[in-house]
View 1 (spheres, rainbow, N blue to C red):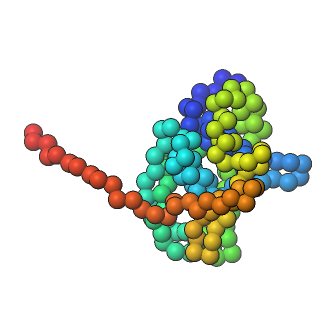
View 2 (view 1 turned 60 degrees about the vertical axis):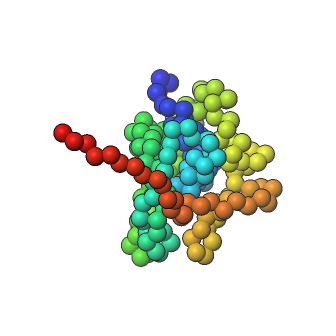
View 3 (view 1 turned 30 degrees about the vertical axis):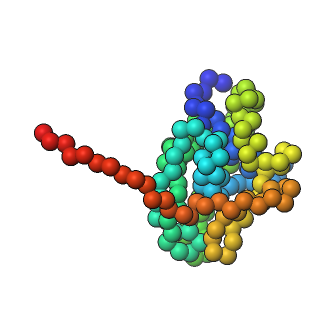
Length: 173
């Protein structure tokens, strides 16, 4: 399969594949909020080399909140969809809000099988223990947490906006 993806794009696909897929009649999808949490955690832990995050304001558990989202990951996600490696599902809730979810396709799984294992093993090292991925839970206040099979818990600070130093110089024409 001759598909060109950046190392980060391959790792994103591996991450989606770790949490989603079809098993017989059962399909597992990952909601966009949970995927944002995983990508942010992956950026902080060094899984993604070129991804960064920026604070955006979005509806998060019924409240407008500042959430750190990676625009580079969003662009790669659109590319994965256009290549047929990931499917997107959009659902409406009973309160007429939309939820977006993603799932790896069979083509995406085959693509991952063709990749060198060492390129993708960091995803398993950071997000899984003994081959089982960490569970993503959201507390009542919407703060996400990863719960690993060993019982280890890690709060993900995706809702904390950071102060960033900014310097500008006027350009005189």
